[in-house]
Length: 108
Image 1 (cartoon, helix red, strand yellow):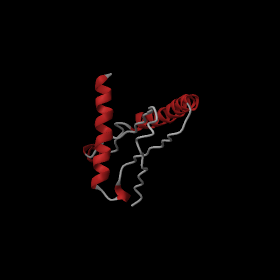
Image 2 (spheres, helix red, strand yellow; image 1 turned 45 degrees about the vertical axis):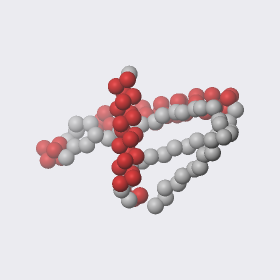
Image 3 (tube, rainbow, N blue to C red; image 1 turned 90 degrees about the vertical axis):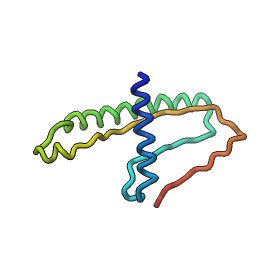
């Protein structure tokens, strides 16, 4: 399991580095949604919702990738192959009134 966490961390860090080095139009998908005034019950409900919906999305993406993985039309196409994927994570923490959060938008 530790190896999987390492791969996920590496993929996220590479995405961040890539996005910092490229113009907005050429960046890799990097999204986050977070709110800081949820009750424990609402946070638990969101956790369940996010797991259920992310599971559906990951299944759809897995089926598409499995269908197209290694399916080359030519040797030249195979020589230009890529590793691509999509990762999702959930986070939750106690809200700290002393820690001010500033939303950051990268819109070009």
